Length: 126
Image: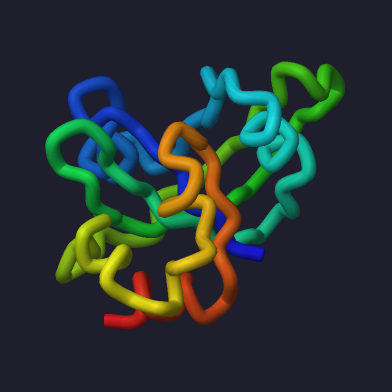
């Protein structure tokens, strides 16, 4: 199951991930989102999503390691894959039936959001 990871672009953006190539994804507080991180499979594809004024998917990454020894504070190492040629906006996603039941739309404060394969393909397939 692919996931969407939310970040404030002025804190850590897709440009930062591209520069760094890899980073530890942490700092998630919501228990549901923490659970998604702790159970994230290595090799899983990820969408990087800028919050704040942007509210759009901006790039792709991959989960390369998970340390869930402390399941309340898992550390997930992610690797940059690519920037999206055309960022996918939240407004655009909300208009699509494909996202009608998505936690991205229904649980706006969730920092890690599971995606269906079809949702991931729509965001990533450019």
